[in-house]
Figure 1 (cartoon, helix red, strand yellow):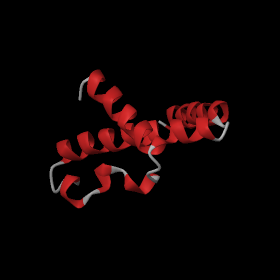
Figure 2 (tube, rainbow, N blue to C red; figure 1 turned 90 degrees about the vertical axis):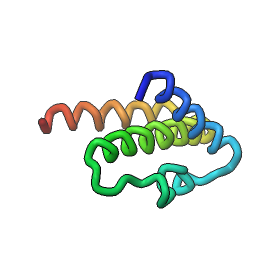
Figure 3 (cartoon, helix red, strand yellow; figure 1 turned 180 degrees about the horizontal axis):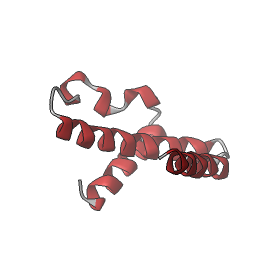
Figure 4 (cartoon, rainbow, N blue to C red; figure 1 turned 180 degrees about the vertical axis):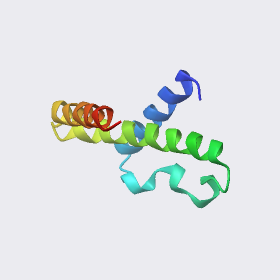
Length: 85
C-alpha cells in the first residue's frame, strides 16, 4: 500500500464518522473483503482496516473534544509495543 492509499483510507474513515457511520461499519469488515488463506493478503487487509479505523477514531475523538487524549493513548500504546519486542 502506498502512502497515498493510506491517507485516502484514513480520510474515508474520517468521512464515514462525519456521515454518522459506526466503527463496526468499517468496509474492511465486510466478508467479501476479508482475506482467506494468504498471509500476504492478511497483512494488506489489516493495514487497510487499521487505516480506515484510525481515520474514524481520530474524527470521533475530535468531535468529542478528546483528540489530545486520543493521540497520547496511541503514542503510549506504540511505546509499550516497542518495549515488548
